[in-house]
Image 1 (tube, rainbow, N blue to C red):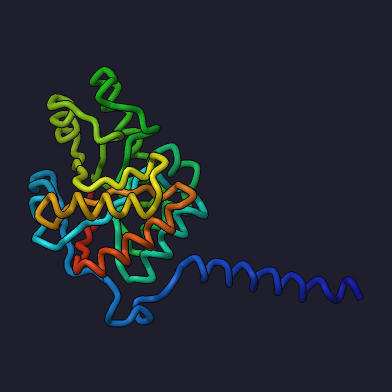
Image 2 (image 1 turned 90 degrees about the vertical axis):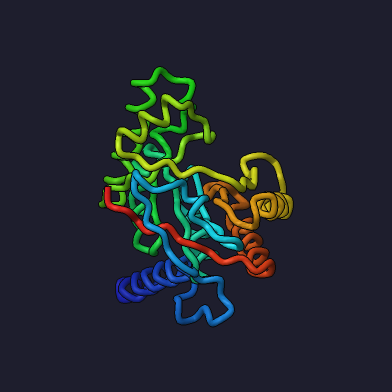
Length: 246
């Protein structure tokens, strides 16, 4: 009797895993409906592009997440984005992408854009220049290997750089994507206060900006949900960065 039950139990377990995976993926585009945030337009950056903030119009934002990937927490953030059929750019640490290559690849497969965020989140502005460039390139290589695609998009850890470092990063073929609306979610700030801070900073920048949150934190999904709801209520639209060729 126990032997006969084993195939049924195995099938039930597999079905459960499929169900969990489907729940994490969230809604499909067809299920979002006309009220979803969606994506109003896309931008493809090159090393010759102006800073993306300068390419935005009034009431437009670009959503970005730093420091991932982290298995379940990144998945939950992606689920919140999928509920609104919208897209973000995830700047991944090289060591994290190397640890979680499957989740790094799933971000790209879900239609989001992926960039690198150094190898280990060191403050590159405090390192000798050759060491800083090596750290950035090591991170880029690890992220590119994880997603199966070269990506030149890059964000400095702590948004910290120097003119010399920025020039060297540009010469290495990386495209620096900065921040204008930081939710400070790396502090003890509540999700509500983080979203309020982002909205205030957007207003200070003519209602447009590069929004920064983080996906590996315990409240990342809730914070993302509140942000998307608030952006929609405030009449903002989302611009997505297309994955540029490396």
